[in-house]
Image (tube, rainbow, N blue to C red; front, side, top):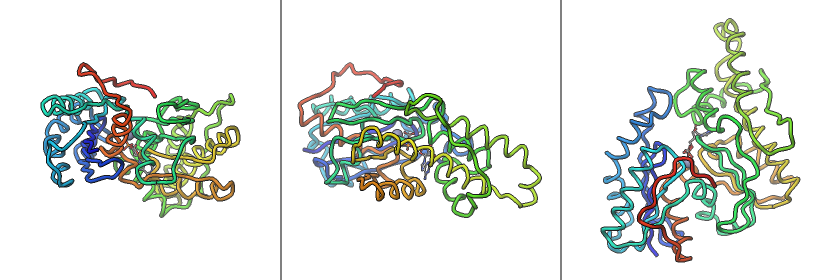
Length: 334
Ligand code: KG4
Ligand code: ZN
């Protein structure tokens, strides 16, 4: 079965061809350069840029897969959650293509695509699993019992994890997106010089909060201007201390969730799952408890068409398709 997957929910225009779960091509056009000067994604620019890029990205993905357009069996497209203008471009394009080519059409929830993305690369990955989706827009934890059966047990009460990295990077004068620039800076800093508090939920929930760490960094910068100017404390030190606090709060949450649910398979997906320190910390815990941790390779962590095509493939196998009147749902939940 050949599936075309299209993803345009935020600032990556991406299209992929999967044969079953095998990736034949996965083209990702990142708009980062267009948004960098604004320190974040500008929705209007993102939508226009998707419109400019999508024909080329789809053409290239067909060419790269070395197939003919009419060989495709179905087209899977993200219809939410995400930026409205961005989602409309991908959904309209995919729907029109499917209609014109008389192919099956399936709308995909972006969160389900992230959540199930480890299946593409890991043959030993299976349900049930504890699944974390940590990206620029989301910080959700699920108990995934089987395909289509997910229970959300925690989410963020304020900023998403990636959003916190992006905002702190801006405060520190580091470039957008903040995740990669903070982890790069952190490598040259001393994480022990400063201790930022980790968020503690007053109740026993598995929810996340990053606003406290963000405020601590903000006050720290204000109160330590002299030490930063003199070089006694560097931006790299602050980046390292922030990364440590933010990542440890995620890892500690996973530890607590494991303690309650005792599920051995843990999947960490979404842009923040590309963080090296997170990988180190979680693998220490995994070793101690003999758990199996599944983190996709970076290309499948950040937004991409392959993860969308993969979920499309699962639905196609069950003969489940979408109606032509399917519309975007920017606030779509999973
Ligand atoms: O999944 P993604 O590409 O897009 C969304 O669906 O949001 O995630 C992008 C987010 C950005 O906020 C970016 O700063 C963060 O993932 N990110 C990272 C790293 N690489 C990307 N955060 C922490 N460490 C990284 N290495
Ligand atoms: Zn995403």
